[in-house]
Image (tube, rainbow, N blue to C red):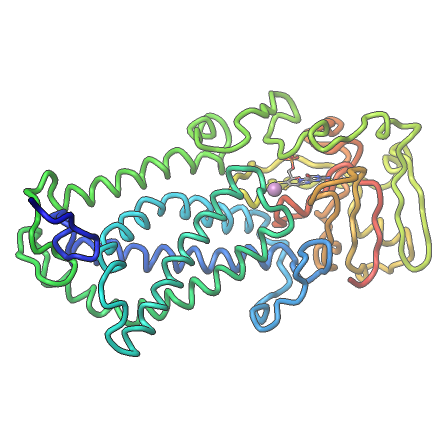
Length: 414
Ligand SMILES: Nc1nc2c(c(=O)[nH]1)N[C@H]1C(S)=C(S)[C@@H](COP(=O)(O)O)O[C@H]1N2
Ligand SMILES: [Mo]
């Protein structure tokens, strides 16, 4: 009778695929991929104006980690569409690579004794942060994209702080391991080279797939995810390929309002009676003044048009839509801010509950003549689901700042 083997025994792990070559290839892919995820993630976080506290982010004080935050520009108008599209699409496509990498080194998790020396103990703790950080970042990211903001309000700080912990451990790991990984790739170019080292099973089962075949399987998985996700950044018919996209159910239909809807008016409890010409008034405040305007009165102000996309933190975006409305800087002028001196603005909607019922915009966004309180899209009145009677649209801003069903705008330094 065999004694049942424990995962702490090296002979417990018997796949012939494990070895330095397989792990090194995946490691080098992740080195590039995760660096891009980190940079696009930090950049997209800055886009959200997180330090215009407190409505955009509950953790207004980032301390040292906020050192890099900058005023998000409004040009080019597709900037956030690009950074966030890359962030989400690449993140999803890297999932098979991450899982394969973890699988390839899992025997090390069970190595005994837990620590041979102080350095070894420190290294294992850093690996805990690395693996824990990776799982945390990928899980929170995917949940946010797929489950419609599972942690509204708290997703941003969770994902942001998690990213720093993860990336710190990632950098330490890369510094320690990249030289060996490159050596492995140089010397083990041929998959038939006999490999040695702690990842190689001392007692492998006969192979059912070659190392290259296993790698092809992982790469194929990534390509399938890429092909079924990337369409969310494009229009029909490419958009139809995004079968893994969330909100598959809320069909925007056709016509002028026929582009993706994030939350419908019904979903957030907008009572359409409050949006009628008799009931609805836009309240504009600033410098101690208050101006109330009906939609008809807004229509008598000089209107401007701008072709701008909507790009959501979830990674999807629309192509340019044709918006028409009152420039935000003209509304600032109504309450006494001179041309070129418009300040930040707090925008509140008719919506009473939910994370995105209000948002703050920075003065550089307010001053851009393409930033509108839109009344029309693609030549017709806004549809109820796209924010009738009036919504914000700002070039290059994350979708979440483009408040729909606007009720009140308060200008002032935030
Ligand atoms: N009042 C309100 N405005 C809102 C939201 C919301 O939930 N409530 N969602 C925001 C988000 S997250 C996005 S991506 C855009 C989407 O706009 P669309 O539905 O017109 O495409 O609206 C933004 N404006
Ligand atoms: Mo969004």
